[in-house]
Image 1: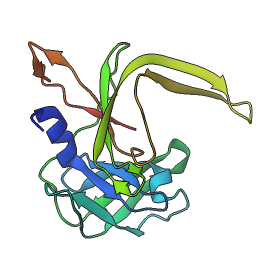
Image 2: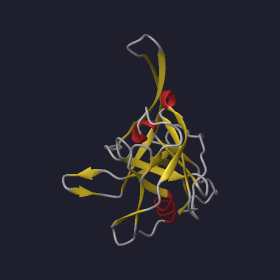
Image 3: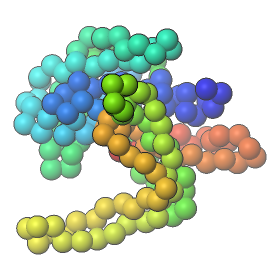
Length: 177
């Protein structure tokens, strides 16, 4: 690939084979974060969830199952714990500024082809609206990114270029897509 930031994010990612298969990523040696809807919002804590890793030859290999450690269905967040440590992980970081370029990683399926892919988008800020129950909701806005099913639960990381080298400032945090 040639880009150390993207290669690092890819090494953190796993395919989460929940009710709505998507992506997850290691935020600690044995801790995976993903979206609750990927696992299944009604899945109980302690349940086993199959995870897969994309190998360099392009094939998914099945790893040991992960266990649902915590489920936050209202926030669309799930934490999974694995029995086997992953040597590469990405800490979470919530600091994003208008105009930042972000890179998302995931496993979209296009036709009969499952892919390990990425996209980039520019952060435009937040928008507020009332949902069907009349509750105020805030969402982040992005432009120029093509998000598809399969990216859910994956890392969405700030991509800074200083002096023409990725993440020269040392910032490597990710958010959840």
